[in-house]
Length: 165
Image (cartoon, rainbow, N blue to C red; front, side, top):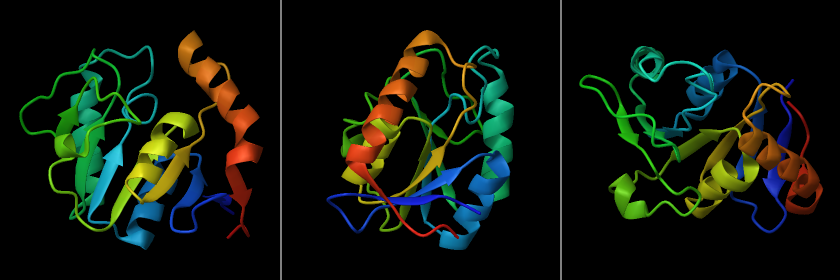
């Protein structure tokens, strides 16, 4: 059963809590977006994994989501795009990523990420569904752990819980 939320001031952007990559794939296949914007860490690559692991995981994700277009979007600068993998936007400055960097967004977009105040706000700016990947506690570096703490504090102020499905 998935937890469902929406922003308190916007009815158009649904937030679905997902706990695994399989749940993300299932949610995307149900909602059939034209484009999925995926955060990189920790969804595709663990915080401590080598950057080279991204290429393999990204190509696999793109194959699993086909025909949905995939764009990888990260605030990190440790990743570079490789030939044959989905488009990668490094140093994206989420949630303030310029929409021109996302090149003519289709009408149905889904954003996947782990931090509500970064990835979730990007989804809100794009008026899209947000698949909130809830990372296990204590496995992230200090800065993402701090952001996750702020998320837990702000969640009751920003979100309204909906019926779970």
